[in-house]
Length: 267
Image 1 (tube, rainbow, N blue to C red):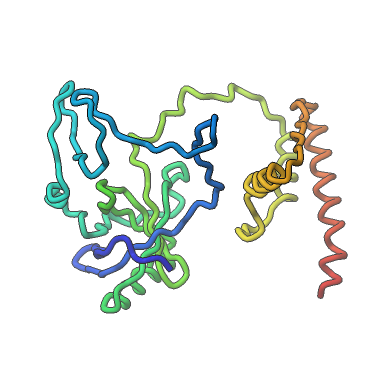
Image 2 (image 1 turned 90 degrees about the vertical axis):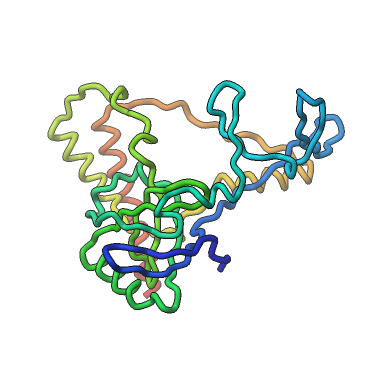
């Protein structure tokens, strides 16, 4: 497990629970470097000041906020520590909401919360109450030089904290539309049957990044000098809706039937 990147406390009412926060996710994409096309050498990125005609390193930089055109106020590390806000070292719970109330579009990134030894009991109490009531703790916390809106929920023996977008960060979608469509009872019935036939349980381990695997194969083929032909995708054709639903339902049922003997044989 990685080291905790933030330490503070969960607070709600008069209760204070000292905790540690960990990053919960990591990307596994293949990384590519920018190279000089002529000799395949990685270029060095340098900072250049046009005013002084000087090259300099990141050590010679400061953070400045542009309050007017080409006018800056400079803040150093000590200044950021002085930001007058209560959530600098506290996950301040503002209230508890039904889990279904927060639309998925608001979720941003995930983190793990673990209690310090002295906060284990109140931490466990909060976790189990959230689990029992099926509620999330809506809170605010500051890290990475930003105050985050977030949601806390039980996760196994610990809790997870999900940062949320603020309302003003969600792009308005009201101008987008699918138009007014008349849906017949038979179409709704057939589509419902298809959804029910394809109903499953979410098992994260059964999904993998197929693009990443295919990209690795492409890299390996390039190393061996083997030519890889692109996959030809069929042009999308919108068939008769009912016919497409019926064919999809039949195909799904055939797949389920073909899996049953194999599943029975394993018992």
